Image (cartoon, rainbow, N blue to C red; front, side, top):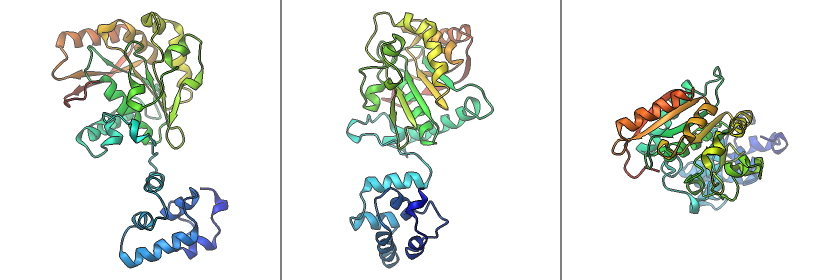
Length: 301
């Protein structure tokens, strides 16, 4: 909070202790959505009606609902990603349906990965999300995991490594003019990473235009160098890979990341295909941190 906004007499006049920097009224003042007289008026109305502060402020027309959402995110120290509702894919359940069974499952997976991959005493920061076949939910898991890590305040980068059919740009409603393919070709730089969130907690590197030989691009040393570079700027780097049935891309990406999370679909993945995927990752020298059985209907992207 900017201390110049907090005249010591103003918080006391509004009924907010000057030491409580996370008080909702103080946050709204910090965001220039309200002034201290308005905070005082809301507190008076709140004491009369028994409503919560934010509800009163919105009802009186002093702030917008979007202002309240942003302030609550700050108060609870949860970054608000601020995605355009019109472009938000409903499969991004961690944001579109945060109380759903699917979103809770994503948070449980995030908690497990925090301990296995991204704790402060572990060197690794990158993880590939892999599947044996198409439409098994790999991109769905990768997108929701990335958003959930960013909601914890982790600086998170989601790399769309599927240079054939990657669709993370569609899930997040962002452009795909440049991305991983143009960076590997030396035609674009870090500006291809698109930042989302109050402070850019979430970065998305879309696949970019389809290259003629995607398998060769990701097998070269440039991809490994790129992943090593972004790990210096992000706490968590997730790589959405093409399925094994499309080629050996997943092997080179797993080798660059050093670790893999495998995704299977209960009604689609065959045991033999999963065995081949696990063998390919192990041959690449990457560790397998766990597996996810996707059983939610319609969540197979």
